[in-house]
Length: 257
Ligand SMILES: Nc1ncnc2c1ncn2[C@@H]1O[C@H](COP(=O)(O)OP(=O)(O)OP(=O)(O)O)[C@@H](O)[C@H]1O
Ligand SMILES: [Mg+2]
Image (cartoon, rainbow, N blue to C red; front, side, top):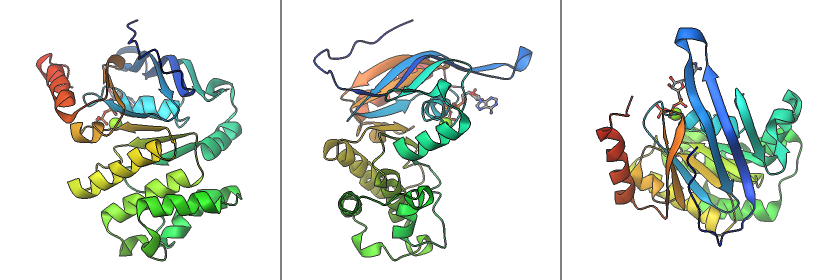
């Protein structure tokens, strides 16, 4: 297994970790190894982008680490909790309490206004939001004047910001986004990315984001590159140009599926 050394001065707590994680779909001739013994960690207060060709296992990795999908072997930890030891109910609870998700298709409820959408997961869980934190989140995403609006009365970028605020509202230990800006124009995308980066810088959040876009990846602190279900490279302090060059490398090796 290849390992990629990190700057050794960083001793931050690990928010999530996958160890020798494998995920195999199907069996026999139709078997697909979506993840092949992936070991990766996501540190607290760090913004990580996951990149790689289509079919390289990005979504599968994110879903397995976020407890949304089962895996074939290896282990996943969120904080101190080993996901493999949890029963379904405990896993649901852990997802609800410790993990925030931002989906590409915002998944907002059309009949609820922005504020109600933001607090919905906590309302379902019967938890009272921490008002000071909630105010901070709403102010940071710039939705203060739009809280009574329904999703249909908001622009795409504003809807996505509601989705980001919803993911942050419960102060999750780690936030995951699968192409969170995939449906946005570049300006709205930049807003959401800037907000994600601020939530890491100013609020100490941990963010893991799957993206195809080198510019989006450049907002992150590091980029993990996947190919054929394996982690093949890592880039710290990425720039859009640096990421683009690395991606071209994949293409010339014919790894794009
Ligand atoms: N439910 C499934 N059954 C069988 N194979 C699957 C299933 N889901 C994913 N795969 C396969 O697993 C591999 C990894 O898929 P994954 O969705 O993780 O890729 P990805 O990197 O997110 O790609 P994209 O950039 O296109 O979203 C692919 O070869 C895919 O065909
Ligand atoms: Mg995907």
